[in-house]
Length: 333
Image (cartoon, rainbow, N blue to C red; front, side):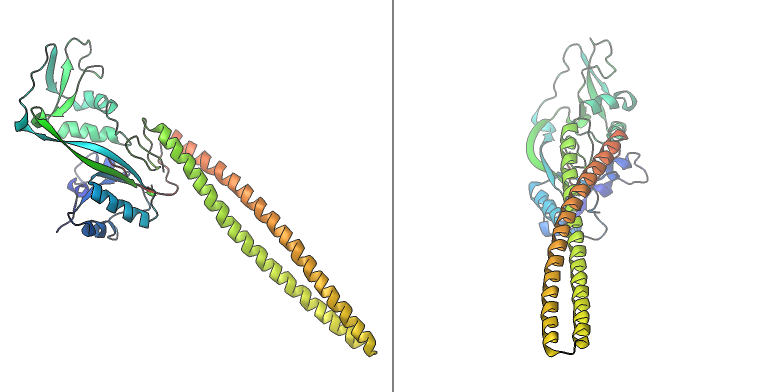
């Protein structure tokens, strides 16, 4: 059974809003066989799991497959359930236009902002996407003639396709999954990330940023602690070996210089006692120093990491640049 992806149904050479599907990557996969879908998701080069990825309109079963594959790649998953509407024209007669209203085509240049303003799934490059939809599809709006600016965003307008204006709805549920590779994060209102900023999802984006800072700081602390412990252990071993060698050599020289056997015995005993005392003192001192160094290193580096990551997140938000610190994100509109 062939595997399908709607991402490739949009030729990048001709669609002006291609950036909407590529920055970040937006796609959809389907196969009646879940194993086939998993094989496609793991196919080399198909998905960059280190970057944010939006999977749109996935079925519940395939959502679980996407989650499974993403988790195996270290992804930070966010899933959003949505209700889709399937229309059948023969089920409902056309609705008459209410008095005082009129139906007319939507103007991509005049009404794109209005449609975008009422759509909760907006994110980066959504304006280009909406404008292209209005250009390519027969879309109409219901306008209030009593309004002084019926052609502007203050008009009461609802958009729909001409083929579905006389249709009924049959609901079927699907879920949308969001990965950060990736993480690839930051979040949108109907999505996550942890990765992508959205004007209506700023609060969730802030929460994701906070979690990202904590994750990064924790990882840095753990890695620094490992390095410091290894370095201190090596230093302790080297110091102990050097001290033992020096003391043994000194003891041998002292014993050789003494002619009396009793004196030799006394010297050896004294040397052994000195060696034991020196080794114990060195181990205790180095151990205490190691503990202090580890605590200080982890604390300082942790604070520095939090400050640095926080500054980067704030700077990225100021220039509307997407920030992915940890992993991928799967999102569906």
